[in-house]
Image (cartoon, rainbow, N blue to C red; front, side):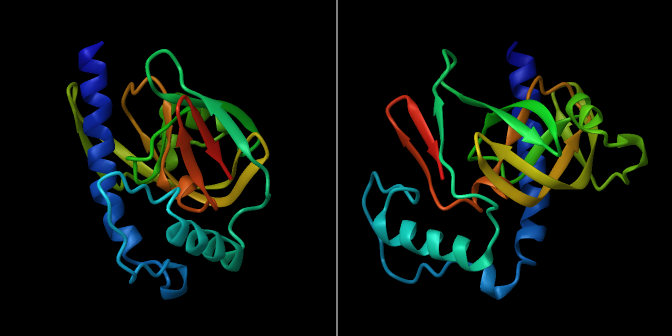
Length: 188
């Protein structure tokens, strides 16, 4: 179990590093300006009014989200938040991971969606407890969680047994708000 977790953490780290280059290529209008000083030991970008207002304005201006719904997720017994996502028309169980810079799909989930993983070019390698595994980039048509939908979501297929696909920042950062209060996560 620990080895599996360690492998998942290593895969996330490699994908996060690889996505830094992709993030730096975003259009200037996609960035949310954060020039005002916001401080506090318990500051949370998802709930701070200035950041929240700017994030909502940026999401509306960019027209990224295809809906104005709200999804409520309950914390599971392992302290994580899981969601039943509709990815390109296929039901996929995902773990919400705000620390992952990208949606990361297991090979099994990618193939269930209809992605021919072997035809995707290898764009990087992830170092896991089981050794190095290839990563492949793909653009998803849509990702939806309980009516909260984002179109055109970049994802990586990780050729390792992560156990569960991850709902990372290529989805979460395009929402108007992501908020955790107690054992409930709200996606808007």
